[in-house]
Length: 298
Image (tube, rainbow, N blue to C red):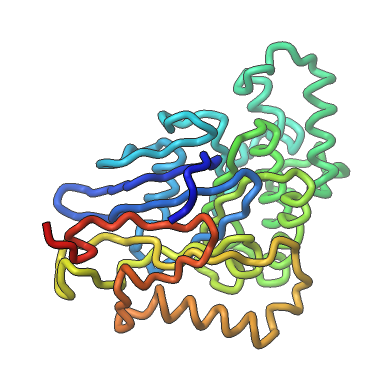
């Protein structure tokens, strides 16, 4: 169990069900500011559902989510999001896409900024994502990787408290994808962002994050092995290296062993470890099982 210190993002006893179907089952998570959390899990485990709860697009069936001391409500600029499909307006230039949120007054200080202030701030970000020479181009003139760089700058200019990324590099070819991974790590180290990164790619998750989380519906507890209405839990919560590694680490035996270990613990429907034996080795990891789940007799 983690200590009582308030964390930047806190999720306590969160359940999410649609009718009688439980998707997320008693989710507990505490994240410090500046952490880079990679989230993986089998198809249908509820990764995107958890993202929508943090964004505020949906509400939990029960439990609570807190960001920077405040209960998460409807979506706002404090929670940025980047999807696999580029969130760019095709009729706007790179500069216009990046500055649109500020020009619409989406940030609290936007009204006090002049056109020059907005442009200068956008140029700083465009330089960081290596697109300062392309400010006047339109999305159709950019490669997929370049479009996603614009989307990242578009999100960061709003200065969100947490940046949510849902399969952001899934549509890119392998070389571009790896280049985007390195670029994201550079931005994260420079900006000290708090990132929640969802991916189906285990190698990507283990390479990028400082913390690897795995949701899984493949487990058992004392409700019984064949209990039918069991939603996903965080079955893995592991600390990863804090400093970005070179890409050749992906070929090391230790890296490959880590991936196979997580794949077995979270993706294998035959593994079915007990909830009390989850791989929750991260210092902030904890789980609050119900008495029924833990086999505690009343």
